Image (cartoon, rainbow, N blue to C red; front, side, top):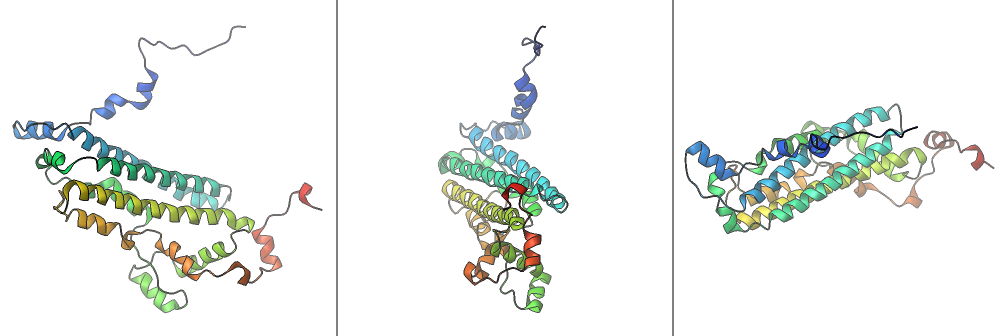
Length: 287
């Protein structure tokens, strides 16, 4: 018998290019001065650094698209987890992927900061009012992860907590926060192990977003100093403000640590609750 192998016509096809479509991707890689000269019928000199500037920003946009895709998928898995707890590990893995993507994006901002202020000034005037703060992908990502609310003061005053919810100063309900506390306290119980990893991943995601914002602000500060930004913003001052506590998405979960006590002071769980939180041992593990 002859071994059947796929046949390729190398003269007519390039599977990598068909898959990645680099020509289509790079066709959007237009330089700002070229666009400006075409639209204004001008002859503004091009800058060597334009391509680098555009590449950094377009790479960021691609990663934001991927982040939104991962968050949408993670939300769907949360619903599925209600019926099948095995989806919990996939939630953790996808949140970890988001954290790693944000690491890459933060490094991208560090790379962007190699653009000297005078080099940026060579083409800044042709950028108009375009600015990174206008990124639709970034805003969409923020909305999807729930950047709307703030952190809480106490867990023991129901009326006060409800007022904070009504003012949108909190995202998580009091019941949800108490649930997060229970997961932290009894994280070693079988049924709480994956939920605990999910909570840890959400907090790491929040930290990586703040780090990306800080890296972005530092890059802008180095390139334009205290000048105003192109998007009618205050530039560095505005970006630095977005890297503060008010822009943290899961700060409610992070502040749960304020209410944790030593493990040896926790009450023992009842036998009935133990049956719910832990699976029956496998036959070979039973004595």
